[in-house]
Amino acid sequence: MRRRFSAAQRRLLAFAAAGRCQGCGTPLTSSFHADHRRPFSAGGPTITANGQALCECCNLLKGNSMIRLRPWQSEAHDKAVDWFVDEATDRHFLIDAAPGAGKTLVSCAIADTMIKRGYVERVVVIAPRTEVVNQWARDFSLVTGRHMSRITGADDDFSTMKLDVCATWAATDALHDGFQELCENADVLVICDEHHHAAVKAAWGDTADSAFRKAAYVLVLTGTPARSDGRHTIFLPYSDDGRVSLPDAGSYRLTYGEAVDLGYCRPVTFHRHHGRFRVDLEDGSQLVITGDQPANVPNGHPAARVLRRSVEFYKLACVPQYDEKGAARLDGFQGSMMSRAADKLDDLRERMPEAGGLVIASSIEMAEYFAELIAGLEGERPIIVHSGIPNPDAKINAFRRTDARWLVSVGMVSEGVDIPRLRVLVYLPSALTELAFRQAVGRIVRSAGPDDDTRAYVVMPSFPVFDDFARRIEAEMSPVATGAPGGNDKRKCPVCRTDCDKGASSCPSCGHEFPARRRTFVTCDACGMHMSPTSLSCPRCGTANTQDFDLSLDEALRDGAITRGIDVSEEDLQFAEANADRVRSLVYRSGDAALIRMIRGVPEECLGLLRKILADVEG
Image (cartoon, rainbow, N blue to C red; front, side, top):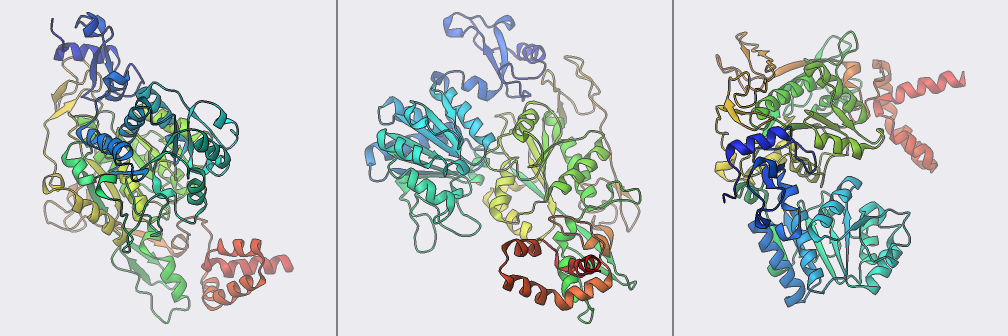
């Protein structure tokens, strides 16, 4: 009897499942698994009535006997078990693998082997966020068949319960005594996810070092081992040059470039979004600022220092731009970023109908601003997650399970958050570190399976700091991966996954009607030709596609991270220029902690306005 479902049967199964995994509800990719409800080995026939459409994860994790590790995972698994059991010279093992390569699955498999061989009684997982902890609990249970309980700082009796547990790094302080007791009374394997959080002589690092000092084994996981501040992390030895110096036998490394070449991750293209900001001053003059051209503020200007700092390119890129009616400007800098990103997402959804985009914003106000931009461009408001939103983890999970286009985040979607359908990133964060950059890029490079032929795409301001980060990632990829993406004249039906002609208005297999493609254009300043916003230069005359964005002085003086939107006059600027150092010095000398915190939160250019407010109160 034939074991494999035919292409026609696969289309029927996908259609019956409405294009979603019948296990977890996530949108199906083209490489979904056609699974026998009654196993083929038990006499189950290969007919559609005995079939179901499952995502790769749900099918592979149906039972431990079905776990199939990727070649690198098998190598890492064997190497870790050999190190822990046969070498026995050090209880720590490091897996340094690219984001999206599959560190969670191989770690669960290592734990399962160590448990079955009798070396480990209990497993503890420490991860960065609640959402990631929940993912660990689910995957661990699926792989090992053992329940893993998520605990918080309020759980003080877990050490006496015979459970495997997972918690956030932030909860380790409150759980310290319980972890310590657990490690003293049982053979414990500790899995430290995103290990860079555990810096030496820092709160989380010191707590974890003390709590897990007597753990039998420690599995250290990271995809970005170097901290931005250069500090060392616990559990790992370092050489004089600051590099981790574990022997080769005690670690396994898989770079992003290797993961791309092996098909575990998708290659990434970086779009460096150019623009010229023109800031109108009160005297009628104008400043021009680009990513590689700082403002030429005359030295004789009465507020030169404040102006130079306030009109830095990246600060201006984080200033929301509104029209005369108070609506988000679709033709502003962020609007042009979103237009380019939306156009690229449209391209990607031709091949991956469920592809989604992620916006990482610098502040809550900027997140709301991006949401308004997206609603204006596409007529659909995105899902927003930040610290001011109730239950953000549920919203992230809802986005994961739908085919919604955009997710806008402030500090909520970073390390460890697994949303495989993300393919486009709009990057405008508050943290300008390489660690944060790599973690963000890691959200959009996870492969959806062997048939996934998409590329990840990053839209970011053309800014030297980001440019350097991007070049280092590009240098890790092979010439094949960094080359221009190959064309594909087919579009994928989101319902039955049939490959259709690019220009087809409906699917010939199931009749699904494709929505009309949104088309946007920009105009070349030199020759007036209309071109796609994704064009780097005009196809007619070759002029670079660099747009000008006009700002008033009041707009430019907004604090990019907080965006207060305070009107500041030239008089107040001059006062701030002349007196800022003296005012801050007086406050710091007072020793009043609350007052010091307050003055640190006031932009320097606003000190003159603060003086007026205080004078009004006194009067």
